[in-house]
Length: 149
Figure (cartoon, rainbow, N blue to C red):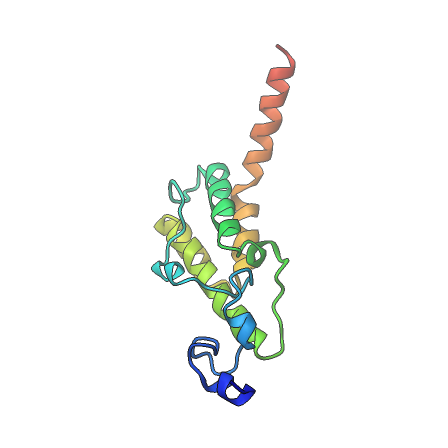
């Protein structure tokens, strides 16, 4: 099979993405841009939705779920937004998936507060700033209490 035939074969192209990926990257399950068909259901496996009082538990569950899906880099910034096609399209698509997954794992009040964030990293930073500070305080108080025993 020649190169021309390979690029025209829908089974070896990148699943109809019109040249967004090379053939190998389109099916590379280790790529941060790879979306498995099971990812389309729109949910992360988390034990409870984020409220204003359970950020510590929620962030652990969500972090683990995103690591399993190879998408944690979208929230910690290690998968930066690429400005060149085709990576920009792939990055934007995956970032939108991650943003959707996170919003579904939040209660309605928290969802509405992050609805208009442009990128997922903005959502992640905002949630950490609003809800994460209490975790540090509680951790310090617990260590202080235990040191007195």
